[in-house]
Image (tube, rainbow, N blue to C red; front, side, top):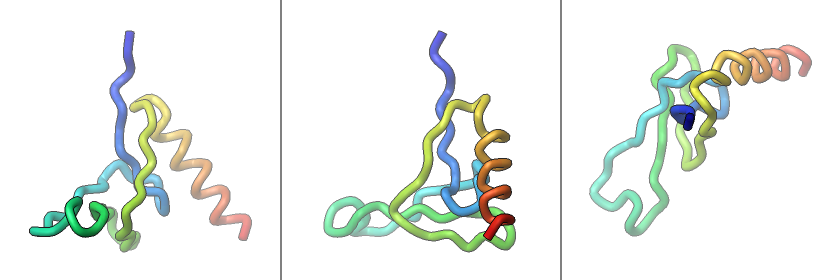
Length: 69
């Protein structure tokens, strides 16, 4: 059975990442995505796509990596 894929913020691991709409997005410039998670502020053309069952594991790994810096 195929797992559902989820877009995840590469900065905080939140699944609350959305595509920013623009009249030229994806045509003249790459699509831009932004994170709606409070305190994140990510905006960029990259997102992580994982199986829905792996979201919590990825968030934990990101928080661990940020905590070790």
